[in-house]
Image 1 (tube, helix red, strand yellow):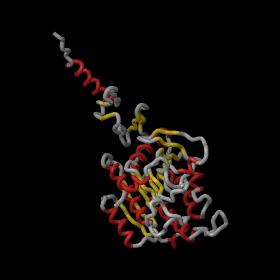
Image 2 (cartoon, rainbow, N blue to C red):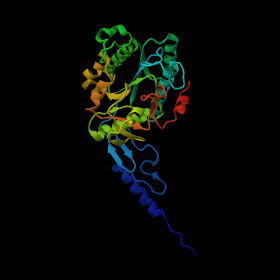
Image 3 (cartoon, rainbow, N blue to C red):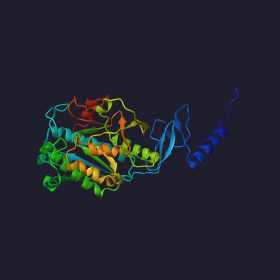
Image 4 (cartoon, rainbow, N blue to C red):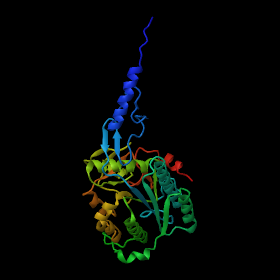
Length: 342
């Protein structure tokens, strides 16, 4: 007769061991089932905890010393202008309002997706609009209102800023009215950031985001800022122009994405209030005179502070398909576009 082993004792000691590990803050993993009994989760689940720890197998744990408190999302909209600096069609060839609505929708969905599990971080959505028709502003308002997020829509008054802007640009040419209005919008957005508490996401209205974009940015911000012992800057797009020259970089591991150090972005980026205050003069100089490239003051900041972007992209920039500043490589652009249809 086959002898039956009694596993009661081994199960008892196993339970005690798991409890001790949990009390000491250790995680253990069953390599056969990829189950983590201390957290009661699969190894493929999110193991990190906002404000406390970042866990990435097999690298282990990073203690969070720089916790995120809040995020203000400041969206610059202008549904009346087809393209800021060119007359080409955007990918999908829709009216500008369609890109604006889908971009805002994607950001709202990403915020709500994050808030399902992490209610301790507060969000505020601020829209700075220039010259959109009333019916389009109503559509934007109705879209955000459905989320129950705190929000406010501002109608940009360009006359409040034009006297502070040099209309002759760095090429010794006259800046276009569209570019001047864009500079006024950035000026207003920066002023609004003064009332922010922590992170500020400055974003244009032609970036359509993945559902996990906000989550990945927040988790990665905490992880990287804690590792580097310093504030960082995040750009959510993997721009094609970043691959047009061979240059050295640094690679990092975020929550679910790889990230790399970059030295250039467009005017969509995430930055802490502390960083905004530190570089206020450089940031506002971008609004006072059209530089070449326009984002040159940002690039000067990136020479002093760490700026990173994800691989693959968390947001696609909906410009012309041939633009070096547009569609991120190795992404299903049509899928992201359709997922955010209203």
